[in-house]
Image (tube, rainbow, N blue to C red; front, side, top):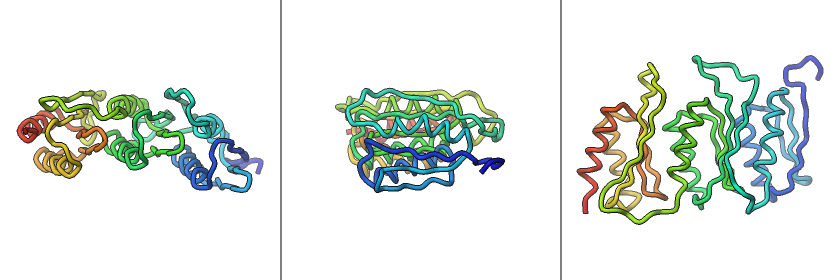
Length: 245
């Protein structure tokens, strides 16, 4: 394979990934964040064989121990800057991160967070790995910072509702692209207390504000959105009017 771009081959043996389904989840995560194409499982030995570039192999060697880990390990966020990623539209999506969720208990809830991150952050390379309850992603520095904030806000145990809607805010860096508005908000309604009611008000906010990035998260009864300053102000007004006993 000398002279080829993807001339590095590796075999990794997993020790804490017990089932073929879990091994396949690991492969899906590796493919998603590193863009490696040639990767296969050999379940009899719990092995993953792959071929790719030097840069891909360096990223995978960093990633494997973070997903193939025993339960109950101390959790923290891990970051790796992947080399060899060409800039696109002036942005380099080379930051890999692994987050371990503490209070997101089900695969459905993890997938809801993945969908929310994709929508609000425009992060295409993000996947859930259910065994260690990990979120694995690759994006730009700005996207990674937003995701870090989103995970802190959403990976919480359900809280008792207060008397009024509460809101937390995040501001993205200024961007002349009108399709990347800077204002991010998460609303926690007090009296909209069922998944269907939360989805109904999410649809109402989308229609009234023309916000395309509005997503409900049922575990903490949250509505997350991203828009212009005027759009999020109108969304707050709608929530105030609708979130009543």
